[in-house]
Image (cartoon, rainbow, N blue to C red; front, side, top):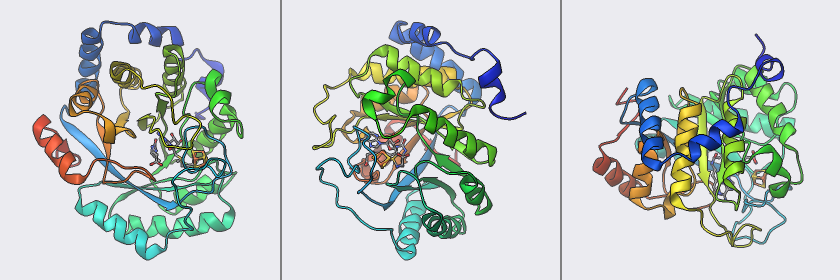
Amino acid sequence: MHALVRQETLEPAWTVQQILDLLGRPLNDLLLQAQAVHRQYHPANAVQCSRLASIKTGGCPEDCAYCPQSSRYATPVINTPLMPLSEVLAQAREARAQGAQRFCMGAAWRSPTARQLDDVIVRVQAVKALGMETCVTLGMLKEGQAQRLKEAGLDYYNHNLDTAPEHYANIITTRHFEDRLDTLRRVRAAGLKVCCGGIVGMGESRAVRAGLVAALANLHPCPESVPVNALVKVPGTPLADTPDLDVFEFVRTIAVARITMPTAVVRLSAGRETMHASTQALCFMAGANSVFIGERLLTTANPVPESDQRLFERLGLVAMPEAV
Ligand code: SAM
Ligand code: DTB
Ligand code: SF4
């Protein structure tokens, strides 16, 4: 059955109101429910580890209000052309040595050209040959491009919904929520695994967070990987001065992602650098079972490997695949 059928013909699996009701539960009740779902579907203490590389940085024509790589904002990002294959391979080897199971390459494009896709394909094939899982995030894909990535051996395509449909135009005006869904359909139709999540802490209401999780959970099938990013406030971006979100709201968002998408790997994604260890521990209790490792995300800082190793030891967590 085509991936679109359920979305267009059947009732959504989750309503926004159901998710709002979950978000409003006492925290302990919500955590217990999320942890019970987690244990039913996943090994209790195993964490999937991915490593990011920004293979083409900055100068992006899009206006995503959170993003330091948009050419519209004066941010500390230095624009950099496509990373040479040798450097990609060096970073992938380092990532593998640090315990990353998956290598994710990001490019600051609205949508890749055919030529740019060729360049990415060479890099995907080389990383795949190291025995790692591969993921790329390149923006919107045109007809046939997802198929080409699949044939090159790509495992995952990352393309986030980022926020709820009704809030999308407040954050990004250069494309529409529906454009994201079109790319996700192409990715699914090509047989690639889907990595799709969003950002919280952009000044949105709880209803918007519920709307984002509903949109993700109602994708059919639901994404294999769901990155939940806490906004990294980069100077120069329109969202740089957004007030901090209550950490428990972040933990609650992780919990509802876990409950509504039980089979997905839920990634405690951007924002860990400034997140206290105890908040991260709550996120793991709420059902997060993936992180980005390595001292950089795309353009911003992430905890250094020693700090994450210590955190895993303190919490008794083990990197996948060793624990599964
Ligand atoms: N240009 C492509 C796109 O937008 O799909 C791929 C790269 S883009 C940087 C990938 C994702 O990074 C975005 O969808 C967003 O969720 C996340 N991201 C970007 N800037 C962020 C920030 N400041 N804080 C948290 N997440 C961010
Ligand atoms: C995702 O959801 N988060 C990652 C990855 N997918 C590409 C990117 C986070 C970027 C954070 C800001 C930066 O480092 O530029
Ligand atoms: Fe460009 Fe992606 Fe950043 Fe938006 S999130 S400005 S599309 S790199």
